[in-house]
Image 1: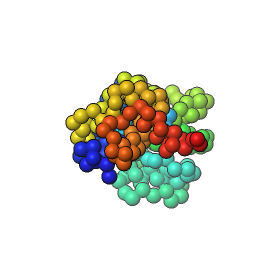
Image 2 (image 1 turned 30 degrees about the vertical axis):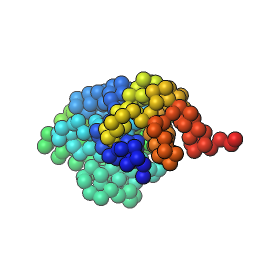
Image 3 (image 1 turned 90 degrees about the vertical axis):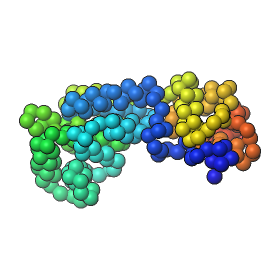
Image 4 (image 1 turned 90 degrees about the horizontal axis):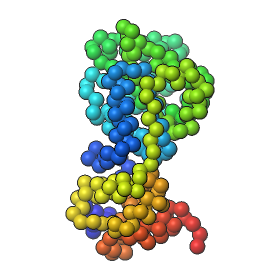
Length: 273
């Protein structure tokens, strides 16, 4: 809607965009490096933790894009609330490349299917990667035991896959109470918000990748944006997208600090006057 007004080729702050919009913030770069270490060295499990909106899904996607074809299949499961038997059946089907199914079955049958798949996968020199999104929902003891079991699968003495738990920080105390699983984690990556400087660079980067040829956000507005969003990329995206829309509607030349504040108050927090 507003792209032509701002002379952009596309919207710069969409939540699901091409890799060119990836901004190498230090926290994300460190997480990618650690996860690559765990996966490429065929470690059994790893943890990627952070509050909602800090970029866990994006980091997992970037890791997938830099791994070579020997680290396949790469399965990303958006963890639904389901019993252990359904989850194991769902995983077995996903690894095999079939249509994911969560139909109940015997856990032992699913475990056997997973083991046979990993053995055959290993014979071809491949190592599977399983990313479990929303892993902070793994509060059930049986489910945690199932995840520990998955991390124990080995082929020729080497783990047949790396399980990456992608979770909000609420999983950390749960893992502290589950030492048998916690000790299987080769690395722990804790994402943090962007700094004020990173926030400004992040916004500039995405605008330029979308086609901006001039500054669209006042330099002194970047600090306000950081304060309003806490450096959370998802909140930054939302507020900047709304600012570009309102700026277009009001025929503004740039986005100011006052506009960020007004939009945050009126459209995001919906605070009463």
